Length: 133
Length: 133
DNA sequence: ACATATACGACTTTTTTAGTCGTATATAAT
DNA sequence: ATTATATACGACTAAAAAAGTCGTATATGT
Image 1 (cartoon, rainbow over the protein chains, first blue to last red):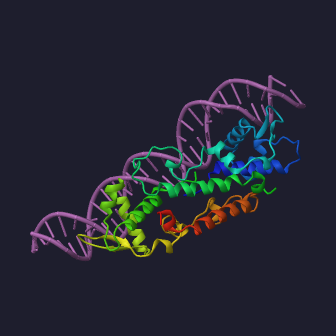
Image 2 (spheres, rainbow over the protein chains, first blue to last red; image 1 turned 30 degrees about the vertical axis):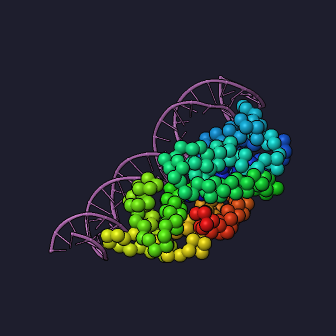
Image 3 (cartoon, each protein chain N blue to C red; image 1 turned 45 degrees about the horizontal axis):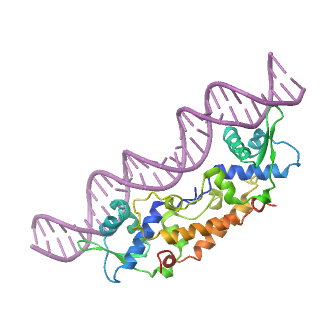
C-alpha cells in the first residue's frame, strides 16, 4: 500500500542521471539500464513515454538517445505521476465515482481531504528537488 | 499506485460507524457488513485485528460484537496503517534495505524525504479527524 | 549493408490485494 | 442440553495490478 511504482522510480532515476550528464549529451536507455540495472525494455518504454510528453527529447538511430527537453525545476511530481500512472487518487472514488456505496459511504469526504493534501504536497515538489537540484 | 487498500478503507468505515452508535452498544460485524455491503468474513477479520490491537473491544457469542476501546482522537492514521499493513514506505528501501542498487541509487535520499513527509502528515491526522469528529 | 538506437503493441509472469472456506469456541435464549 | 448467533483464525483461491519480456518496425551513423 502507498507504494511508488517501479515505473516512477525508474523515471526519476533516469531523469536524475540524464540531468547529471553534460547538457548536450544524448543518453541512451542502454547506458542507464546498465548503470542502474534496470531492465532495458522496460526503461525504454518509460523514456519513450516521457519523450512523448515533452519531458525528454529523443534522437533515433545509432548514437541516439535522450536528453532533457524541459528543465526539471519547471515540473512537479504530480505532473510526472499523471503521465506515468494517471490521476492520483488514494481511493477509486477520489478519481471517478463508480462505487457500490454511493452516498452511504461515511468516510468519503475526509478521505478526499487526505487525497487533496497529498496532491498539494506533490504539486509543490519540483522534480529538481527530488533529483537533487 | 498510491492507493489505500480496502482493508484500511473498511476499517475506517467500521470505526466511523461504531463511533456513531450509542456508546455502549456492541456492534456486530454482520450489521456493518450489511449496511455498507462489505464482505462479512473479510470485515470480521479486520475487526478482529483491530480488537487484537486494543482499538476495539470484542464480546463473543450471541449478541456479541465490537465497541470502541480507545477514543478515536487518541490515535493517528499512521498507527492504524501500521496495524493493518505494516510500516509505511513508498519504496521498499524506505523500510528495509534489500535493493540491488545499494549505494548506486541516486534518488534514495529525496524519496525518503517524501516518505517522511507523508508519514508526518499521517502522524498528525487523528482517526477522529478522518471519521468526522 | 550493418550495427545500434528508438517506437510500440501484445503478451507473460510475478506480486499484491481481495475475498472465501472450514472449523473451533463463546454465549444468550429456549 | 440444544440451537442460533457471534467472534477467532488458519488455509486457501481468485482477481487485479505491477513488472517484465518478445517481436517487429523504423530511423540513422559508420
